[in-house]
Image (cartoon, rainbow, N blue to C red; front, side, top):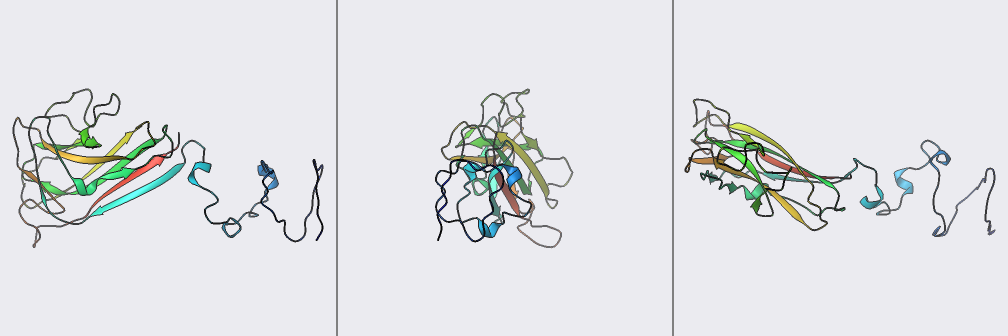
Length: 222
């Protein structure tokens, strides 16, 4: 076995066989030196490229999904109170304190009253941070201010809906945080209940459709 030690190499260094060692003093390889297809997944040791190595803005550092199939009922309280749908909680531990967190929910179900909507809670409380409120910040924190709301129809018994919510936040932390959708009435007082993954009138029968609810949370490098 031959040993080559050099400070600078000008031109092209051709190696036949394998280069061994940990390469501790190797600081960088210019992109132009990597021929198309030269680096394949089989040549990268397991766990050598952690998510912290993907430092470019817009990189998706992690994605977490939840699925919920059960069909319970959640009350729609009035005022600024709300009932969180705990099984759709999205929990994440950001890699960077400057990361953007994106939450997305697709909730199947039906309310027994069309006067209701959805807010977003973080770590157990309604989000009131300026610019990231879990409701319409122009309307303010009141009983008719939501991220999204119930669509009106004349059937609050056998016609479920699909509610899609997209929410983003910059939690400014590398500690674990969690987000939850929360349902609330837009009347002054309580207004029925929300029946998730089912219709308001039945937990499942002909003409009363059942469905599945989902949640997804992502960390985006900034």
